Length: 294
Length: 265
Image (cartoon, rainbow over all chains, first blue to last red; front, side, top):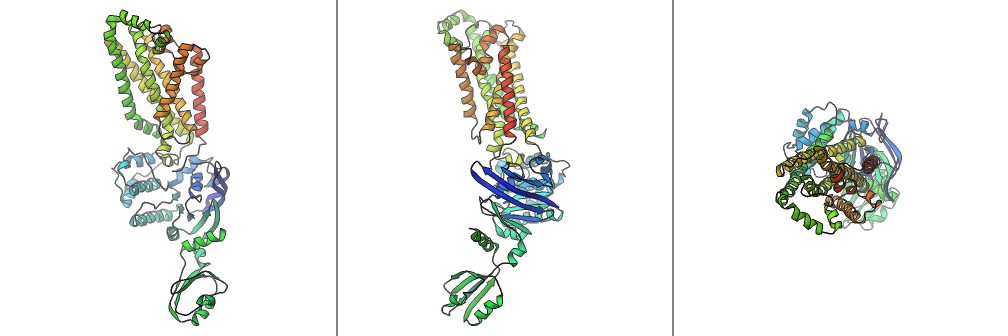
């Protein structure tokens, strides 16, 4: 079953482009990554799904219901963590969380305790006395406390230290195991790589590609770095499948896609000092998509 | 109901401050009555020496300052002005605060309809105005009794003190309607002060010009204290205008805010 289905969603802020014809869908139980640089339209898409803003054209359904028309009904089962969190400054953490819980039916209040303990959050402090990272923790707890079926995370890790990020990922994975679907927006590819099964790449308001994370890496490139004293080696690597060839101080490096034996044949003829063959990072793949489209 | 409770809780402190200040202001003005009371004739003479326009502006045209209700209508004008600013503050900030304090991403992703949030917030403003008016009527009554042992008709007193409620509701709903038109409101007080004083100046202007058309422009004219202190009632046509305008403000608030984009942080 499709949990989120977005169909030709377009949003203009006056004359400014927000997103244009965005379409993708998220299956039940999946952790779906949504990546793109700042200003590409990730937040615009998410804010439309939550009916914080209204689309110029196109539509989206969540749990099979139109996200504008049935917004209030749908939001019963959504947990949302915005990239920057703000709460009523004068309230205590526990009061904000109780206020948040009061909007949902049958909330298990012991979850407040449990989640705050997991995130190491002091419930009796006032919001205004919290650091940015601690406010973020309040956001995490209030986003998860009603056991939502769909969790929407908009650049959730900013402000969290690596230890907390790990705890947060564990919480998310735990919810996912219990059946929650997750839409994870980020511009940091390594965290998407760590969690997600599929990703949508967005650029300048348009979806560039929706791809399986594994395929994305398998079907693509190897980075090869060669250190050699031999002269004129770059000329030898002038065949199909090689891209981004650059000369370095000690040798050359390039991306390769194709039969690896072709490379070995050439390497055999060289006097090597060192060779590194590695998986390209998602960043590099990502840049590749971006350059190709540009 | 949780939104209503939350709103009232957040407004409690400011409501108390406004309540204490307005009661204090009225108390100070009415305390002067103790001095004036014994020299009414002299004061009346001084006031009569003022140009009639000026007297009108001060709300002392037809009033007899010797009577405690007459003096009250003069003092109450300042409460009306401040109370209007307070009400407009409430109206302007109740919806815009979520945008200004960036808490909209918290509230509006909850499973409630926008229209319900508006209703609850409007109700919270209305309840605060009612509390304010109950407090003001009760304390006005007590203050009048303290400074004078003259007897007066309670209904007449109520008609005068009731102008606060009429003006406060008007400015609160106007404030709401103004707030949904503006994209992001950084500070509330300049807007409410500006609008209230603009209407007050229009009213003052019309006291001198006495233009029947201009009278429709300012709510201060609708519930003119010198008229009320003379007739102990409001003018029917203006009460109708008050109803219609409030309805228009409420309509626009719902209509626009229900489909308004919340600016991202």
